[in-house]
Amino acid sequence: MSQQLKKLLYNKSFVDAPEGGHIAEWKISPWKVFALFIVFLILAVFVYGWVFTEDRQNFFGNIVFYSIVLVLVIFGLWFAGKTAWSFKQRITYFLIAFILLWFLYWILAIAFDALGNPGGLDFHVGGSTLWVVLSLLAFIGAKRIDKHIDRNDMFFGLLVLAVFIGANIPMNDTGGFLVNVDNIINSIMSYLP
Image (cartoon, rainbow, N blue to C red; front, side, top):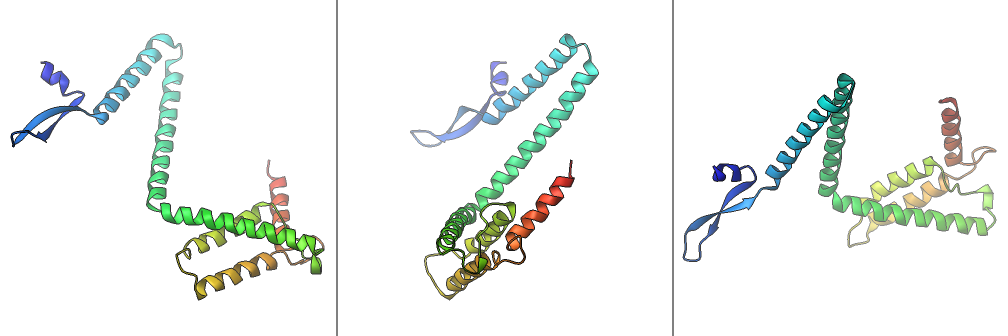
C-alpha cells in the first residue's frame, strides 16, 4: 500500500549500479506535486464555496470566469516567453539598436538646437509616433548587427539620418511629420471617452 501511495509523488528512475547494471531509485516528480497541489486547491475552493458562501452560483461563476482568464494569461505568458527565448538574440539586438538609435536622435536634437534649428528643423522629442519610428528602424537594424561593418551598414546609417531629418522637416506651422501625426492621434483620442 505504501508503494502505491509513493507513486502519487515519486517516479522510478533507473541509475547505474556501482557493480554494473541498473537499479531503480525513487525521485520526487515536480509535475505530480504540482498536479496534487492543483487538486487540493480545487477541492478547497469547492468546499469553501459550498459551505461558507451564501450565493454559491455567483461565487462559482466568478471562480470559473477568473480561472479561464488566469489560464489564458498563463498561456499567453508562456507563449510569449517561449517565443522570446527562441528569438533572444534578435530581441537583444533590437534593444541594442533601439537604445543606439534613441541616443543618436537625442544627440541630433541637441546639436540642431545648439545650431539654432537651421531651416526651422526642430526635432520632436516625445510622442508615440517617434517611438513607432524608432522601433521600426531598430527592428530593421537588429537584422544588420554582426561583426563586420560593410556597405549595407552604411546604407542603413544613411537611411536612419534621412528618416530622422526628414520626419522633422517643417511641413506646416505646426512642425514636421512626427508632430503632425502626434497631433492627429491626440485629436482622435480626445473624442474617445
